[in-house]
Amino acid sequence: MAYFIEFVDVHKSFDDRKVLDGVSFGVEKGETFAILGPSGVGKTVMLTHIVGLLKPDSGRIFVDGQDITDMRENQLAAVRKKVQLVFQSGALFDSISVWENVAFPLTDVGVSDEEIDRKVTDILKLVEIEELADLMPSELSTGMKRAVAIARAVAAEPQAILYDEPTTMVDPLMSQTINNLVRKMQNQLGLTQMVVTHDIANCAEKVADRVALLNKGKFVFQGTIQELYASDDPVVKEFVEEDRIRFEKEKEFA
Picture (cartoon, rainbow, N blue to C red):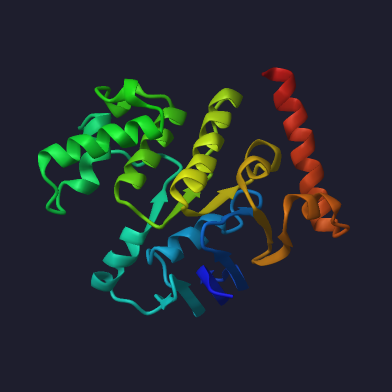
């Protein structure tokens, strides 16, 4: 099977801390794949490997059939156009408006002003944030910053988007909005997507075709949400139960 993103026996340590310990998985074209696990287990480290911000200690990483493991910085530019990373913070440019943030990927690729205007307008409509166009990032909530970051990622016309904890630190209504956007990017644009999250009920359950659970540097589970809930693995059961308790508590305070 040809995967759009593939890890083959990837190892990564920071000093004496092993973060990825022989991780292998593949994400099919047009699929949304979620990596689950508590904070600090190395989920985000995987995303940064896919765009070449980190290199594995050993193992291979493939994007769209290309081995990117040993690519130099100038070669990675083409990979980063294909695969956009939406950071948890949104990573917007604070000194320019929402409209200008979304237009940014289009400004140095020889696109006319009229075409930029049309494309940005279309993207803002697609992501349902037209009313934010003239605002500055400092005027936006955490969730809205993420929505703008998704719009900016889409403007680069990628084949894949990676999301780092898209629903963390936002209210339930904004979580729902972000989840709907992630699904919309898959259904309307046919994008391949990876979502890193510690939330099953609030995120993975809503957006993912398949999920994997990372524990102590290894995947202890890969499969559908239904298979996750049915798993007898003690690590999986504990993670699912903790998520259920957290979800019930959040519902109480919502």
